[in-house]
Image (cartoon, rainbow, N blue to C red):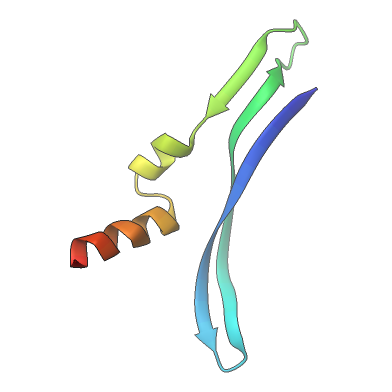
Amino acid sequence: MSRGGAWHDDELALTSAGWRIVKRTARNFWRAGSSADGDGSPMVADSFPDVAAAGRVGYINALRAQLARQ
């Protein structure tokens, strides 16, 4: 049994028909539960801080760019 969370990092474009997603990246950023070999060990991973720090989250990058313009 495990639980997890994910996010979609979408790039949008305004078209004549309205806003459309032109690129979607879905990433799992945390999970908790038993290990794959079933030994009952808890498994927790949270990659969001590392991925954001590496500049791979569009929303965070947009916020940083906005702050830099102020």
